[in-house]
Length: 384
Image (tube, rainbow, N blue to C red):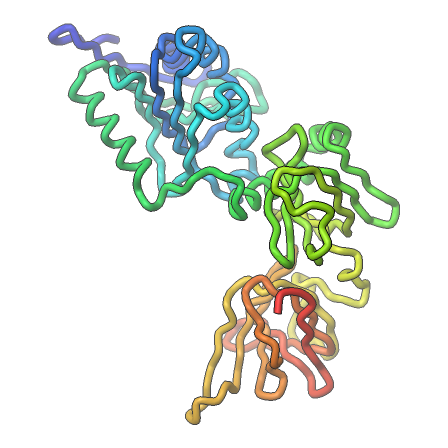
């Protein structure tokens, strides 16, 4: 349906289950004729491949075409494959350094602006359900409503809106920082748990081997490290990452992007979590997983990472008498109480890996807490 006034066109573009895919056809058509710039906001992308042919057509018009993308990036979405990072990586392989990406976890709008002269916007995501895909594994097709317009006033406002979101403080660069790599590790974990056939292909392409003793060897590219952990990207799949917890002092390379190999115990992978290998020297069968803790345990040993800055509580004289520490492992989290003489002299900080020996558990104000017995102790394994 067309609405025309003063030679400007506004067109209604539905996605109506599998019956009407006008929206996708319009995207293909207009992107194929792009000359200079494409501005895109899509919170969720699972069918990025649908735009590949249109992108290639546009590049034949101008090899220097630039694309600016704003998307969401949340760990649970990536784990559940509501948002597929390999689509973004595929776009990167097409445009190289002419694809600019930011993520903003507040966006819900869906908009494409082409050459500051035409715009498509509406309710459809770039997903199977949003585009009316006929493939069963792409979700249930939905009924969506979208508009195309080349009205200069509307397009100018759309371009301005995109610029405002792009430049807003809540929009973050999509670079290989710790958060983005954590999302990629969640992606690999989700594939491992829910898509065995795809994971088996990854193990062959990415050189991942599993030993009978539970040790996993992975050869990847160093993407991030600090004194307690590092992330390795896949060699060919840049949408996956492995997290390694352990001593990183004697790495074979400290140059980001160079190949490196790690060996570690695969931590318990259940639910939304990272694909994590732990240094075998830090793993012992005498230790309890945090998810296995319950009230009134008398002697437990736990290894965990400090996920937040410790909360220090002082008495009236100003002396520290209680420190509360949030410990996490790959299965859950728990609050650790340290009283008086149990507070270690070494500084515990966020990211430290600590070992609790001879602890006990209790319920305080409805919260499960971990404490130390009189003969218990806490040791900082990494990161003091």
